[in-house]
Length: 63
Image 1 (tube, rainbow, N blue to C red):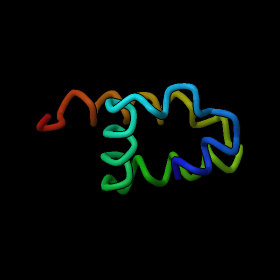
Image 2: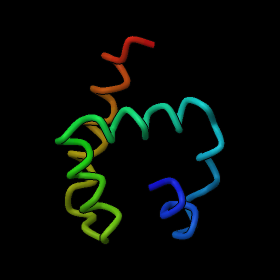
Image 3: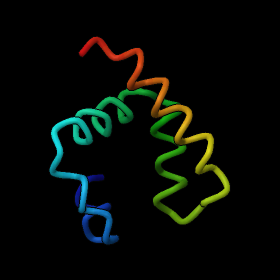
């Protein structure tokens, strides 16, 4: 997924450890993974949902 984001031109923040950790966390969450997959395929209608889910995961992560 990180490679896909880099190819798509979104690599500016991917080297940050916090971003990588959040993306890895999102892949373990079925809802976030599904939203992220749709986003990467071009569905921007779910941007708000994806943002909210990522914030929820970040705020409830054990780290």
